[in-house]
Image 1 (tube, rainbow, N blue to C red):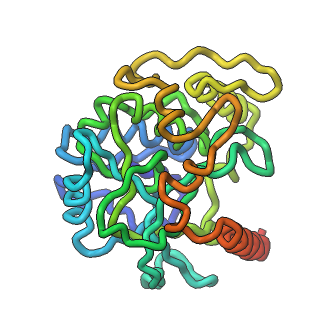
Image 2 (image 1 turned 90 degrees about the horizontal axis):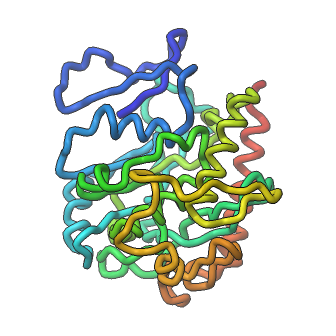
Length: 323
């Protein structure tokens, strides 16, 4: 795992620099040299991966179910594809509002055991900082028999595949300070290299989705140079997806190997498979249903109301934090 640290940070109570376990490899990076999550993941692949049989990528702030790795391997075996990759937003957990790092683990894992499936959201958001497709998740009304189901999209929150995926589709280290755009870029790169994406048929973990307890890297990304480097990286993704960049800016051509599209399938074939059109910024209902029948999902309006309520609650909690 990779860790971004500051020498003056006295709260990194979980970091054991001398753990002595040969199965755990850590890459420490001064926080002043951090360039966002895509760069961090590229460093992990380059510096820490040792051709293991399997490769699992997660966000921070995870809690796993017992035996999660055996479940994931079995789910991978059940996928109807020679090159499957599992991707999921998994379930969620919460922390008390007054939680302080370093105290006993007070995570409250969601009791709802319903599966989630990855679906297409909107192109961009209300801030209109970019026009990249957002990857979201929706609750499934069926357990799908515990079987992994094909997905039109991939997520960085939880991903599990054979280790060959790192060699074939390595993370692009040039996507500096990118957050939105990472997932749809990796989706098309994986798919065009012949990797088939599947939702998990069983839950393996819980993720802390609320950011009320922690700042994000964007809150300290404030120099003109950092903003310019992010803008350059965004143009790189627009070129990859064949999308027009906002403001009439000309996007560069598709990045060269190994960070471009694959040759197993074309971008046009992906768009037909997923029912997504990048240039027109359209995601059809099939994409918004995650390739599932509509009767397997709750009404979209109910989920939108839930998401809006949760977002308002998160903003309210964040506003109450001491400045």
